Image (cartoon, rainbow, N blue to C red; front, side, top):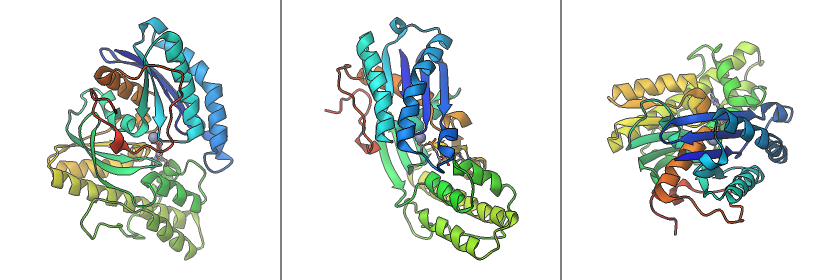
Length: 344
Ligand code: KG4
Ligand code: ZN
């Protein structure tokens, strides 16, 4: 089962080919970071236009690297949502046109299902069931994963996603976009414990998150000082510690409540080094194992969409490539059905 996949949900153009028998054959990502940096955030219209520019050259590159011709493919997968609608429509239009032209099934993939399955791209992949901590720019959730499409959300953010909180706080601190990795870098120079921010919603039962108050805590701390490099680094450090500690506390709680033996961490914030260290300790303390995709597959990429697409195609057969372009800006992950059952 060999699948070509396209990811264009936000500001990365990703293309990949995954073969269920042979693994990942090729993948390429073009990041639009430089394009959006001058604006301090993603400009949706520019993102859509740049996906148009990048997609065909990346497709050619990946097909060549994977030594794959259209006749070798079993389907064309693409991120159908959630994400920026204009950006999604570019990938959807190209993927569905290729599928139609090549007489292959088109496979709409849920972006967060892609993230959630990304750790299965690694050697020694975790078997189902597992607990997934999904932490990206748009989502923060703990999910009980019993199999493909068998997801129960145990907790999620009631306001900002973890990545969004990183990005907004980075902006307050005067850091360039994309803020998350920049804030993490600044935090390295901060003195641990010099400032302490709250661990939101950890003092009551439940698995939901709230991160918008931490942004306010950072702003209040920033207003109380002159704004020197060291002071900003201390604030970044306190912020990162609060987010990491909160995610670890809720992950431990979810592992204990469900008795699940494995924790899978995915999404852009999963690239955060301190979070990885802290979750490794948390899981080890409970005798659970912890699994991450490699750093480049934590953030948006085509490889995770190709894998999710291939698994979906193997289970349900994808959908017949008619001429409709299907994409959804909003798409709750709980609407997904197990592979092998149709959405009806
Ligand atoms: O999964 P992703 O690439 O895109 C979405 O689907 O949202 O996640 C991007 C998010 C951004 O908010 C970015 O700031 C954050 O992940 N991020 C990080 C780090 N690397 C990326 N946050 C904290 N520390 C990092 N090292
Ligand atoms: Zn993502």
